[in-house]
Length: 385
Picture 1 (cartoon, rainbow, N blue to C red):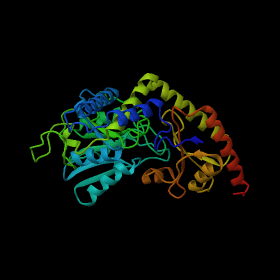
Picture 2 (picture 1 turned 90 degrees about the vertical axis):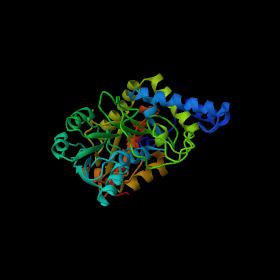
Picture 3 (picture 1 turned 135 degrees about the vertical axis):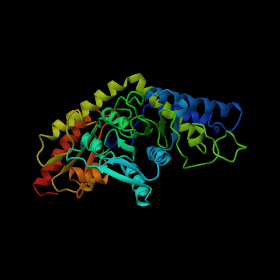
Picture 4 (picture 1 turned 180 degrees about the horizontal axis):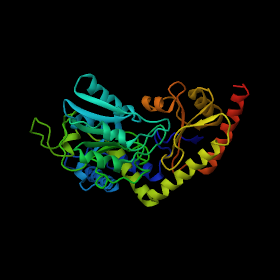
């Protein structure tokens, strides 16, 4: 089996992630922060250690502002609904995942906000001037991805944040695809809230994610409940992380996520990125020599380790099914929860078959995929499929 669906979730994980997750579950899998016994305190300490690792990894300075969630979707909902102001104007882009678009559209539908969606071109790139020109007197928030989950286009966050800060507009960044691939520094880049999953390029287990609040922003709560702290108070605690972490955390998987961060730090983020870029470049260069294949995205340094393709008028789902059923190659077809991005690059009818690479993929796997795609493309061209 060859796994090229790492933009959905990385697989396999580093061995240390499996080991640490199982160790936590078997040896100190108690409820963190709810009891005073040694197992509960052990889990609590381990979770705090991961808070610190993640905070350091993204250039933050306060681990208490690192909030754990179950995925990036939950992080984005907490961030957007926690900071947005009624009757304010919000800016986002056509390259966003539904985890951004749907919460914002819901707020627009009920008349809570005005929403502007910045268009993208056929390569999946946005024009920063369009963001600048969309800012109004009541613009309070911009929500934007740092890297597209469909075509891997990388957003110029530093330039955008500079424009936003000059206009007193808050910035929420969806780092679902970018974290673990790009160098991210929330302070240097003036990111107000960074949202991320644990199960993608951070190599953590599913059911993990988080958001980091840069500075002293006060977010409204969308979930209230037990925190193990201030238990005699009927009101939700007003201190982070307790304020936004109601209910029992996925402690054992958070410990596994910490092991994923350890792995990245040991190997080096630059080393991982260079390897994934090597795979991406080989794949794109090889595809250019195959007739009948359309490659989407800029195909250069503006594109990360995510490459969608189509073969003539073959439905992307049929292509993905053949790759899996006949050759054991796993990719994601369809619309990738990014409808406006597909409209932008012209794949609204066919969808696209997305190949996404990880540190654990090899050049040999890429070469094999190219050979199989060439075979399928010839069959489609000759009418044999």
